[in-house]
Image (cartoon, rainbow, N blue to C red):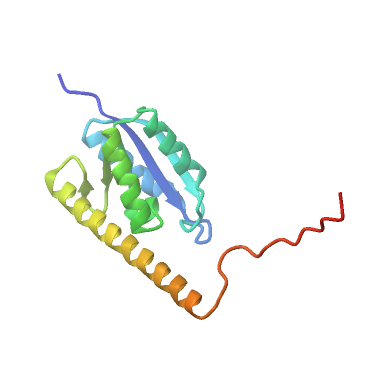
Length: 163
């Protein structure tokens, strides 16, 4: 007996370009139908991908953490994640939760060995990038200190005569 795979679809369209989510959702539904997967929920954000908070993406992540889905299917990486860092973090969390991630147009399906290899490369690049940023920040702070710049919040002047 074939195991039923419960799938969440995530779609994001930009309001600036007057895009419509139907193009993405149609292709994603067809893909899931071909694989005989059950789409249990569709999450759609209509906003710029540069936003830190996206309501539908936040709800998707909650559903994943509650283990309500076995796989997340997206149209493209850039519809899902703002950056490589965000993508890697989400994929790491999905991996820990046992949730597969499929990006339809990049051909990534973390249930396959090839895609797990690609993900591992992405994760390594993201870790390297984090380390470079950390080193640059430390170097910048050290440089500022050597120039006599005081770091941190300015001190508050408290009037002790007031009670």
